[in-house]
Amino acid sequence: MANEPDDPLNEFNARLKAARGKTDKESAPRGRGTQSGLGQGLRIGIEMVVSVAVGAGIGYFIDNWAETTPLFMIVFLFLGFAAGIMNVLRIARGLDEAVGFGRAMREKEARDKLAEDKELSAKLARTEDSGANE
Image (cartoon, rainbow, N blue to C red; front, side, top):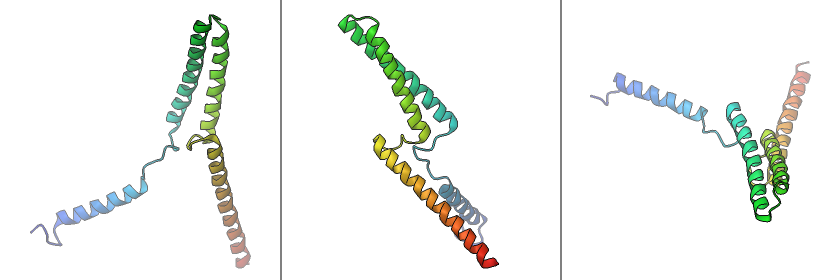
């Protein structure tokens, strides 16, 4: 009885599967490079704090070992700050997805060139269409 084609439960299951299939295709899992604004802001803040803290910590331990109390801590504090700024810039430009900065730059340039090519071909198609309509 449950296998009859007019069974409302089978119709409902078919519609439910069709609806879930559409949403599964539409909401594909997001990659690492796509973050929400809040997530990206928290990541930037954490990376800045951690890089400065690690730099100061390394400097502190070198100062204790070499008995040069504030010297290395100040130097490594600034180095940690510079590393944090570089990480923030890398995140803001979208270059943190790949391994290695050079590889990330090449991939970003390739993506940008592809977007420019698509935009140019769309503009060319629009001008051809407007010329054909005249």
